[in-house]
Length: 297
Length: 228
Image (cartoon, rainbow over all chains, first blue to last red; front, side, top):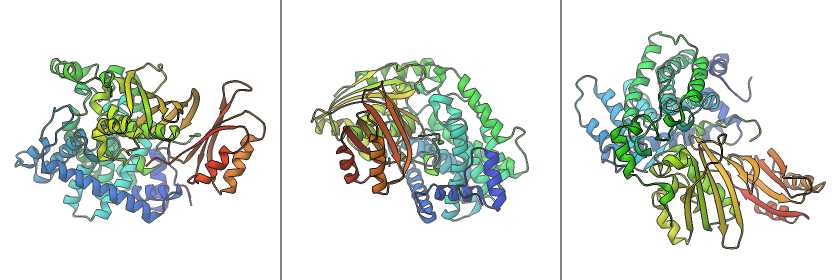
């Protein structure tokens, strides 16, 4: 028996799960217990608290439009929730609304759960909410899915990065969507290797995504991108459940992500010096934003 | 942190529970402020905060400035007061000043240098980086290279570089049944003061810190709590 449940790669993670016929979420849970700080019940309780906070930020964001720091987004979550879907269904529209709502909360300095980051914090709660609606499962299944998502995120964070300043938006929204895809696939009953294919399909199709937020605010394009990539995650999970496999193994996708992030120009890595940030409208916002070096008290 | 993966806990990925908008630029900044406060030993009366890289470029829009000051006040990254940190800092009598700095090409883009002074005259210069997702590293204290994550209770000492002193500290830890996870000793040159950081598996009792300060040749000893 592997007492530490340590995994450095997706291959390690799948091997650990398959060796004992357990889920990715269970591997993550045993790994956390093996760190020696918390016992099994404490880990589950702490994850339950995070799911409760996620649900709270979805509700807060849907209940009222949030005043974001830059004022570049206002009530998009509410607008989506009040819209009768024409081209998708009520649950898919609910996923979009919740992803928008959470990220608007985050941009308004309200409380959220980073997953893995605040800029990408809408994707995982909204996706898991949607999966829970479709599958009709209890919160305990969502808690295990959060653990599975964490295991996938740990590998991506340690082998590549989850910092937009280091790897662009693929490191935040890309990783978040990949975590959500794998977690939803596992929630729907996929074995570990299939869940990891879902993760790889989602991440692969965010490669190259830059971080060029307007005015340095985590608002444009971040907030709407959370809704769009929550649906992207669902697509990846559904494809994996259909038996479609990522041609490039997950660990090689992560290696490519690292290489692309390192090669990405600095002006497209959370410095607001290029891309959308330096469009005409982006520069207008930039001109009126506060600067830290002028702040004194 | 000696050779360990920075994201080793599920809660480093699903978490922290935090006030937005950015885990690296807001939550990480608040944590760095909290570590600086703990190293100083309390609320500073004067604070100079120099922002490097992406912190300097996009910090204001991310609330990095407010989050750093919130950390200096002892607020956690999930504290609702973070939003109004400047008002709270004024009430607490902190005089602060932000600037920008280029710490070099190899320094993480989300980094800050704190230059702090406490009411009792204690001064601190600390450089720290926010790695993403709320994870942080202290990379320099008073000009000494360090590598502290805040994931473990940490003892930081400055002492005379004499034989046996390090063993005396480690004997004290063993007497208080505190296991050492990682340990690092540095000095600028032979005969200068040495600098030690010691990350432990268990919380550091106040009596242990007091006893450490009483070791002959000890200049200073501070305990950093595990970050929430």
